[in-house]
Image (cartoon, one colour):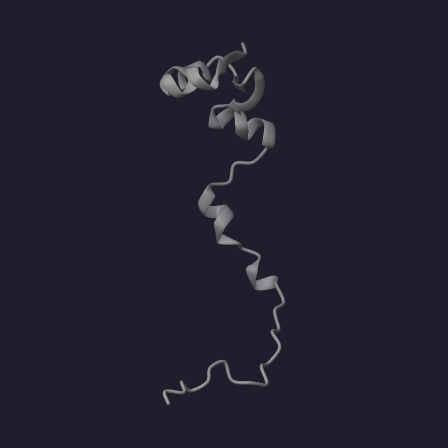
Length: 85
């Protein structure tokens, strides 16, 4: 595994090259000489996070039924008739 470092400018000019470089290891993207971002393949990301959930599974909120929500009742009207006089 090798680490590739590219500047933000190089990344913006050739995103495909940076994506191809992830097959050899992480790609560090620098901004003004400082490492700002890391580009990984999804497989590498899943290895280091131990997660294999899809975005659909994350957004589904399967535990939403367990959330207790008891909003207070309003004691006033939400709207008033318009005064057109």
